[in-house]
Image (tube, rainbow, N blue to C red; front, side, top):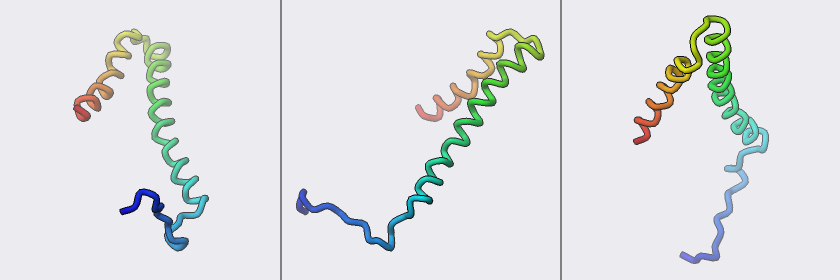
Length: 72
């Protein structure tokens, strides 16, 4: 196989730019929701319920460590 030969995708197999943009924007939702949940836990737990920030941070660390164990 030649190193200079570049694969060219057939025009019928190409995705329109609108589908590429929609696919890319779909990744924003889970990231934004996870960040919102963790920010609200800190605000509601500390100010609203009076739980210490240390305890809240330890509780929020549990899902993160579980994901780390799955990766290892």
